[in-house]
Length: 151
Image 1: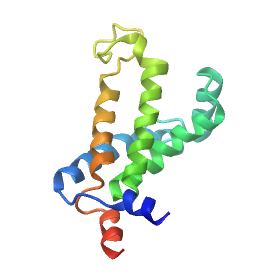
Image 2: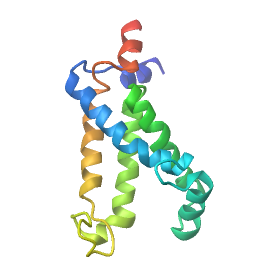
Image 3: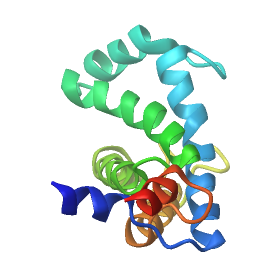
Image 4: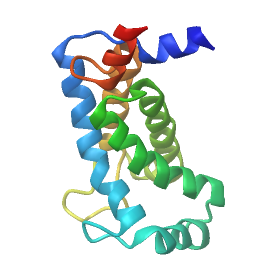
């Protein structure tokens, strides 16, 4: 257990990894806030759960996990707390998004509204940022870094 905690919290203290972590957290946060709190024009928890489970046919645990990963994961990434865990969670989530909803629409996002849905280029960018964090940790100025220094 101690080895797992050390692995999760140890971080490369370079600023570039902090930039990747903050970028990922700041980009995902509004999506999580829409789904959980109804901010930024979102519908909030109940309506999002209803949409995910009824209209999209996702199991309740998957719908719940998406909301929690986007909201609490993004907040934790911004703070640099358990960043590897949350980056791995986002990677899994976005692989699922690509497979279930984007692959059929090709690579490109729907910039001009002429596709039936979104392509997977945005998701690949998210996965790329998440992989940087998984491999290197939270970077400089993170709670993970503070905790690992004290151990």
